[in-house]
Length: 263
Image (cartoon, rainbow, N blue to C red; front, top):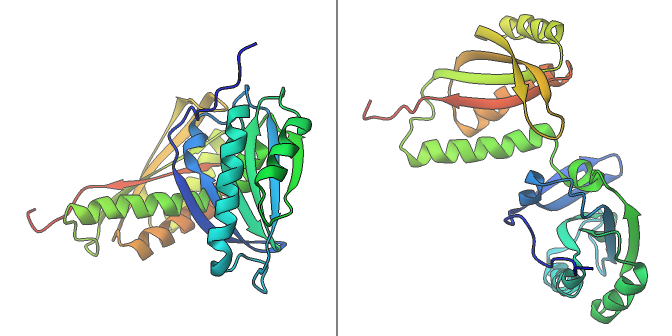
């Protein structure tokens, strides 16, 4: 039997963000690079390593003074477990603990993992939990940003590119948007609601969509005249997202032409 590969089959792209949950505030650190391959059939087992914080803040989050110590232990744990094929995808900090998430082959046992964790946990009493998670639910639903949070991240990237090209962000122009829906009646209902908000130029088409759930979707294209500064694109994205999500749709973002003083 071949030994598990210790190399990640994706390019790492770590991001962190803050969110509120029903249990209180949380900070998430996630490798977004894994999204392209998730879920991996070869790594159906979720390992969660729980590091109880020594001096958490009153809201249960990690104090900045403890960050270096906790990350040092996390790095040591990842390094010792990587030869077993366990791949780090991120961590969640909440309620006084930092929970590190890794995925590995089903052949790896707790008897292999626990001694390595104990040898590299330093001053922390690290808890170890092994769970079958072939759909990578912990990564895709627990760690991954919500659709709106993800869109805000994409907004930052798009606006940064426009700014770097000398765009006049506060000058209004036609901004194109796109969304997908599973059924035609939903797309038409959303069209009516968006039209009331000043959007126009609606075009919808049945198109094939690739991904984790390939199939046919109704694509709705539309536009409105807006500025594209950070605050405005976030407000518009939330405006569209709330309507689209309520109709089981997916907002696919926006695009526009560059407007600079050279035009």
